[in-house]
Length: 115
Image 1 (tube, rainbow, N blue to C red):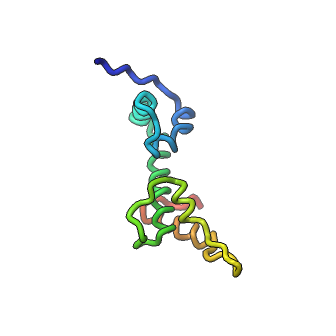
Image 2: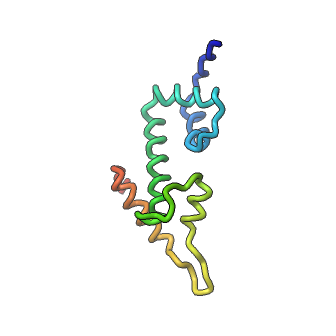
């Protein structure tokens, strides 16, 4: 059976599909469209690379470098792990502390600050 050719999508459509793509939730046709677009678009490929590195940095910052788990399976789990624990005594971890760890991890991955 011949595989149908992927429909050409533009950058806006590709970026709307970014998180579904990273979460491996696209059907075969949309996955083919996304991969075809990424093979020809350096800008969108750069966005995908950054999003992957960002998710990795958040995972590592949330779990600490040694992390108690090898892998967090989805963004919801990342958000849960990254959320500060609020007790009657106030937040356990400040947002700025988590931000600093994420930024540090991104820098280790080769991304530099926009400042």
